[in-house]
Structures are given as structure tokens and as C-alpha cells.
Length: 128
Image (cartoon, rainbow, N blue to C red; front, side, top):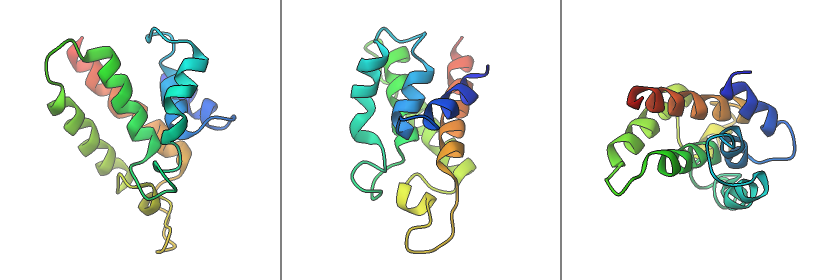
């Protein structure tokens, strides 16, 4: 199963968007599933009631840091992931993605999770 679909499967379970992205990388990260769930617990629903950044995007950035940071800056990679995510979804803010206040849903949670993993995978493959 592709990692993107694995993340969506986690999201359809009892995990928030951030946890779902983190759990899709459990095989590459040196943390247990429970530790990954704990790490991502506060990043669901847009970091504080849908007002903040998408949890799936936060999860992708966390994975980027855990897999790629070795004492050298990774800001350019983080910016690239953010930019590509916004190009695919229309925003990085949960409230905007879900159409709160506008009634126009830009991207479902499942698709946010899918796209977050997709752009992260592209960035990680470039480095291999």
C-alpha cells in the first residue's frame, strides 16, 4: 500500500490529521506508534480549533525534521513542502481548507493527509 493511502487509512480511524501522517512513517521513525500519536496529538484540527496550520502539513514538517535534520538547516525543504501543499490544497490554514466562514471546502481532511504525504515523499525522494 502506498504511504499516502496508509496515512488516509489512519485518518479514517481514530487519529487526527497530524497523527495520521506521522503514523504512515512509523517504519522509518524511531518512535513507537503511541509516541507518534502523542507527538501529533496537539496538532489536529488546525492547532487550536481550526485557526492554525493544517495538522497534516505539520505532521509532514515533523517527519521532514526527524528524517532529514542532521545539524544543518532544512528551511528550504520546509518552505518547498509548504508551497507545494498550498498549491495542491489552496491553503495551509485548516479553517480555510474546511470552508469555515466561506462555506467553500477547499480540501477534505483525507486529501490534506494524502497531499501532505505526497509532497513530503517527493522531497525525500529528491534527497535519495
